[in-house]
Length: 420
Ligand code: GLC
Image 1 (spheres, rainbow, N blue to C red):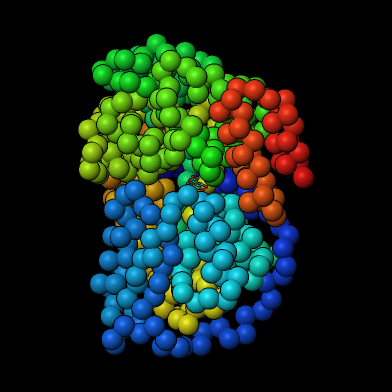
Image 2 (cartoon, helix red, strand yellow; image 1 turned 90 degrees about the vertical axis):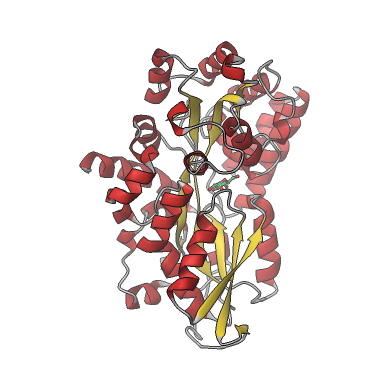
């Protein structure tokens, strides 16, 4: 397991790049921490509202059920939000900035957690962690760093994420598979393979990924441009892919959802997605016809973007204690085991990386291609005004990809946004 831990460490280091995000106002001190208020009581139980994105796996519901069954003081209710990250950001911001306590526990994307902490919307959890005997080192350090603002901790990991290339093992030759898994290939070569294999075993598409105008496009642009090292080149390749004969006609509307549906139904040879897609295939979720032995994973050509979600407590929650109990449960060994074994998520509680049960049910974690992907992660832009930067990237990239013209201007706009 030593090698595994070394790899994880590398991942964690790349991940913590995200955390350099600063700016915003100081969060101020928490003065009324721990005040027990029974507002929102459901019968004799205290209702805890969990604002979390829709999950494409059964894991989130399973973890909530397990918490609710483990005690009878609190009952967690999932307020299902969109899994369009930027939309969820805006929805939460509207609620929190009005001082609302409609949500007690919040799920936050790693790219904007710092902004929320800086704005003073979240409870600090340092004392609570101390009281519970929890150490920062118990958790994925990149995730922890993303929820640390001016030395204070505001979040625990819900799940860490990284971008992966999925390929059909039963279609791609052994030599090509080896090359992909090593990570030593380019997007151009991936395009050639997409062309070569498309049509085999009833496939309709060579490669599917996320190109709709939303946060997922920022992620994909980050990957195609190698974290904005080659903006023109990366966008040009994306345009070539958009118009390739093997691309879905509506690739410019593809999110993770369209991606997993097509790959899982056997329509695509290659797909770019997050680890959860393996969890769906493994769990043979509804509509999945591809089996795990037909699926391999590899690093993306320029490395996969780091992503993930964090758990935090609304500072205005009327039930801070109950909210914290739930956060602790989900981020702890029991919750993370459910997330990893039932959802295919990478565990955010480090000890589980050595857990036989986790490894046995999430064998992707031990695949060579996956381990190599952990070593080559890249980060989205880091900025205190992340949402604005990401917005510019999405709007500009989508404009170019829809028309194929104005590459230079678009690249210039993106360059300015990421260097601000
Ligand atoms: C995944 C990632 C998140 C990213 C989003 C983009 O949910 O975990 O970090 O922003 O995808 O669609």
